[in-house]
Amino acid sequence: MTKAILTTLFTLTFVVSPAFTSFSGFEANQLPIPQVDPPIQPAGYAFSIWGLIYAWLVVSAAYGLWQRREDAAWDRARLSLIASLAIGTPWLYVATQSAILATIMIIAMAVTAIAAMIMAPQKDRWLFQAPVAIYAGWLTAASCVSIGSTMAGYGIAFESLGWAYAGISIALVVSLGVYAMRRSAPEYLLTVVWALVGIIVANGMVVWTVSALAAVGIVMLLAATILMGRAPKLAVS
Image (cartoon, rainbow, N blue to C red; front, side):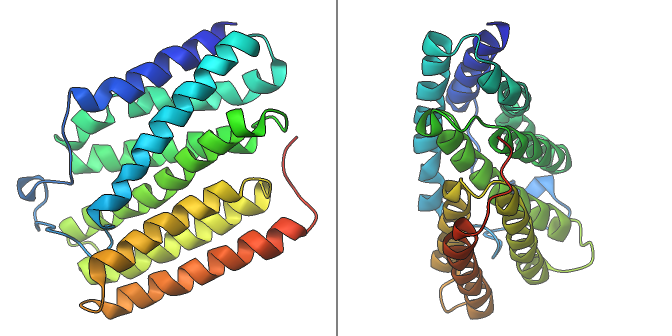
């Protein structure tokens, strides 16, 4: 029961945190090389997916507290989800203060969210696995955006264009690897597809090579959703 309560508590703190901090990308003065609309960043509309994520996580937490308070299968995944939400609660504030720390934190959020998705119970699919999968999918994409923006901002290895290629490639490798471990969660890959569409919209033909790579990534992820979903599953039960 304690994990159900903590899941509900941290879901609520995570969901209300945007009311106290506004963040729309790293400010120019946060990075030695200012990143203004870096090519790895999706168009603004793509971030509206947070509305769905917040709402569905609240529904999941409420149902879990009401009907699955002492469910061992739910509890197994709850600990990782609690960790992700606890890290995520102050993330917006941290992101306004330190790009490096924010990048480290969002990677930790993604890793723990992915762990929660992989351990999600097979029952109540739409009330636990699905919302967590969408949350984990967006964090996977957002982590790569944060890595690309921060590394380019410090002039490490590549400029912003190079980090756009690298970030998209990393997102594809990670998301395909994760999906191989939880093939019953196509929502995870479809959320990464949503982010890639946003990158195409943001870059258009102006930076067509980034758009092209994102389009190839979309085809790969959609193909994986169909082909891997039909193969024998390696999902943790």
